[in-house]
View 1 (cartoon, rainbow over the protein chains, first blue to last red):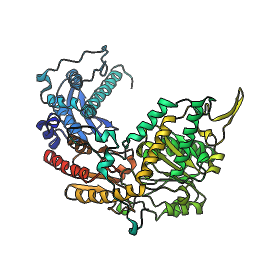
View 2: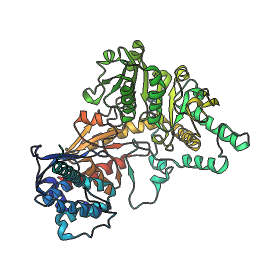
View 3: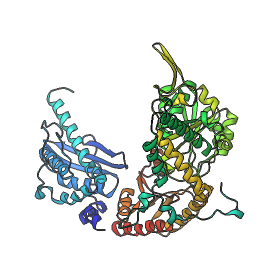
View 4: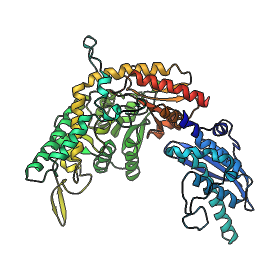
Length: 168
Length: 417
């Protein structure tokens, strides 16, 4: 099963069997964002507590295949406690690793980006998911939680901006 | 259906059959175990050659040209129509067989052309909760547009439809639209009581035959249905062509579906008159080569003998269910092996392992199965799962294929236990 060893690395299976940060956060005040892969039924629910530009807390709920759920678990570990900009950078790096180029994530107005150089130190455990690119059908499984997180960060930022400008 | 016990059909020589299928007989490091014919079947060489020969010798647009090859193309296209009609014992194939893109389009045709003309606010349609989205969504759309009530036959015990409520559901309904065989459970619908109840209530019956027609002999007259859909690519034919059969007087009364060339008799600046049956429902240049491919597929299946295919699949399905039962983690979503109750379409769960992961490991062993919701999300919800793994059998599968699947499942356990 040499091909599959790239996909189902031990660390991935570990996160699948013992997912970190499982559960819910009362929302509000936390933000609840749902992500869904219509092709196969993978579901990720991200509970996001963002304040003062930091991801203070994060929980993951949902169900799906080993790739989608372990990626969500690894994401939660990588992002929890980080500043929002750093979280966004991790999203970009992760998606670059999945060979997806994104023009902009959230509010940042950047042009088409070169794929970020993959910094193994930055991605840490996440680099284990690199094998997914050999199985293109599964890329959407791996990025599901990250897209859901990005959506949550966008929503949090939009709300903050509208509050800041005095609109309700 | 099937031969009487006294005249058991001669068994299929699958090894020899496989040589007819280029994709299955290609040189490979490992034998391809294709268990996804419910999604799409493979093509025998004769189907490919028939389409190719058409393009190489006599392709021209149909129903127009006066020149030789155009006339021949028209003759071939219309001959394919009649053959498709005879395949399901249509009484007037030359008028009642409409070529569509697939069954989904066939059902949409009925939903738009019959539904819009005949359904009013408060009318009711009966579906089931196990339908493929092709026989759900068009009716959801009509229901929303017209204020039509949708009623549902439920799944009963042993993964078969519960007909206990049939009379109540059909009472006052205008149409009953049901799958003839489930693409998830393999369950065969008991169309006889459905048609009887519908007739008594004055409702029409549409049967989605996408899964049934490739495997079992269909006789629309004996069934007594009013509309029947089937598709070429699930029965060894090409993609891009399906059939809507409808009773002539119903099709006659229906307005056109798509507008354009071919479906008209006359067009003026201020209006048009539609063509007669069946061309009223065939707008634009049709899938001519595909029709010829469908005809070749019907010829191939008839030469093999549908009753032999049926008997082969019944035995192989029993073998598959038995061998799957060796894995304690396997849970089958479907009835037992009795061929009067099911086709060789088998959905299962393997413990808690997500079907995606099951299918991935199986792929590593050269085994092709389908993982997902199979375009039947309401059924998935009823079963309490997001997705299932599905293996489906056809005439080119044999016990080696089943053994390969079952053995590969051991690898799934090793990886995910």
